[in-house]
Image (cartoon, rainbow, N blue to C red; front, side, top):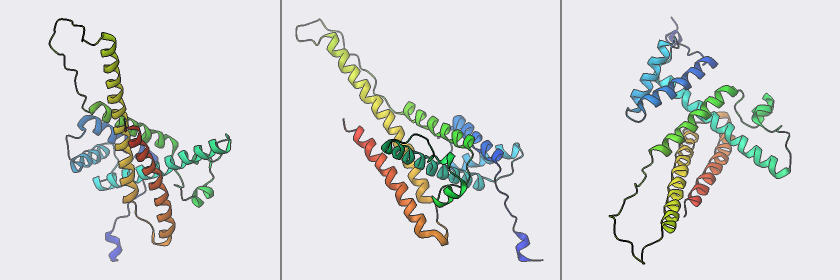
Length: 229
C-alpha cells in the first residue's frame, strides 16, 4: 500500500457549502456573540454543517472563512480604488469593476479568479451587521439629572442646555460609528497579514500585500482624524 493512500483528499468547497457556512457563522454569532470561545464557536459551526450533510471539521470551516474574508477584502479594496480612479478620470462605464473583468485580467491583477457575487454580498451583509452590533454595544454615558433647584438669573436657558445635549449626542454617535469601522479595519488588516504567499510569486504577493495595507492604514488614519474632536 502506498504511503499516500492514508491521506484523504479534501474536496473543494461548493458554492452551496460556502453560502451555508456564512449563514451558519451569522446564526451562531447572533445566538452566542462573544459569550463562547473561538474553539467552541467553530466546533458548533462544524456540527451545524454536519447536520446539513456538509462534512467539514472546525479547522476547515475556520480556514475557509479566513480565506473568504481575505478574498472579499481584496475585491472590496479593488472596487474602492477602481471607483476612485473612475471619479478622477471622469469615466463612468464601470469597466474596471471586478465583476466586469475577464478571468485573464483578474489573474494579471492578482485578484481572485472567481468569486460569486451573491456570496460577496452575503459576507458584506455579515460585516455590516458586525459594525452595527459594535455600535450598539458601545458604552454610552447616561444623562445625570441634577436635583431640582429654584430658577435663578445665572441658570442656563433651556435652549442652551438643549444645544449642549445635542452636541454631546453627536460626539457619542461619532465615536460609536467610527469605533465600529476601526474594528472592521483591524480585522481586515489581521486577515491580510495572516495570508501566506506561494513560493513562486513571493515578490508580487508582498507588493500587493503592502498596497492593501497602505490603503487600510490610510482608512484607519482618516478614522482617527474624524475622532479628533
